[in-house]
Image: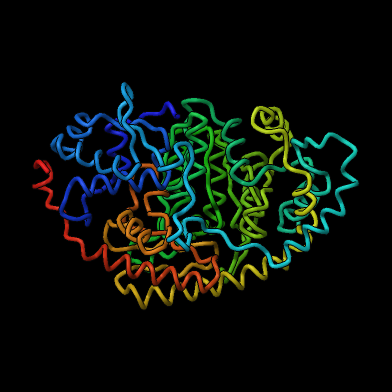
Length: 485
């Protein structure tokens, strides 16, 4: 059981605009939004929710409304009342972990990741043949097999950033790399700049390290087409560095998750120039960097645009080979690699050897792998854009030129409600606020493009049924919200 607790103010922030488009009953609107927060993981299992009176005062509701909402959540198995501990978030049948989706949920678009390579099993069998040569030591490998580090370094060099194996540390996926860097680069109370929206597990890792987050808005991929004006993100980040003097910043320079945008070369130079001036280390997540469909130009890795040590690069095979192959890496100066190795042992004792042998065999075939993925992404993107335009003419669907998803504008702040309705239609999909830190982005929905086309077609059909249900809900009468239910 977690010792975490949420204040009424913190829960209000997570709730966002929970009243909009959520039906006529305030207690149902509130309980539905808290339910989604728990199922999404934004409120962790074991977290103590604020007392009913405290939350009622904060939200301007009657205590009876909040009490009824909490009772409704308890009836669904999502809250547990403990003597002396108040109301604690839980999941039915699994109090410590999120459950597998119910049997009726057959499509999971909450994770934007492609299926495994068709020849992955064959490559794994070949990697087993390499294993006997590795059995002469205990097998605990905190820095990575030399052959794999060399292959990763060679890949960076081929992309225009000369790299030596001493600059590479192999990790258990990209998320592990983000967590390690957060522990080394950020002290409790330090500021860390992030994009908004952004990859949620990254800001969670920074928060776990004690960082105070400084969000910088990211424009949708084709913001000009939306009539919003293109945000000069390079300038916005530079100003954030100057104002906040952050210890670190987490960015996705290429095909950002979830917006799909790519930083241009001027913005890359501007960001690293400002970071160097403030002593900020930029953590650049490149897990989607080479998933180009038809961008029309190929930038260098971010570290090539600034002084050595200003940008630390993260990569993995999760979006190219398969998410089940838990191998990632960090490219940094050797001095930082040594610091990372020193702090790694309390969390893990190294990356599995067999998986490293598998990836070492696949790295020389990366161009072939990317060619396959680009064809799959093109088919997925084109079909998703076509179906969304036909089914939801009121939505704003950007035309992305790479990456794993598109960031769709819904035209109304109903993303969380739509995600809940989609569950009833057999579809798991992440609501827009999952990618923010303050309950924002209710007007957006991340729609992956990297799954098989047949799955994407079925998902859009399920979204259509969920949208009809969501759009048909009457708006909440804000004046009636404090009334007794």
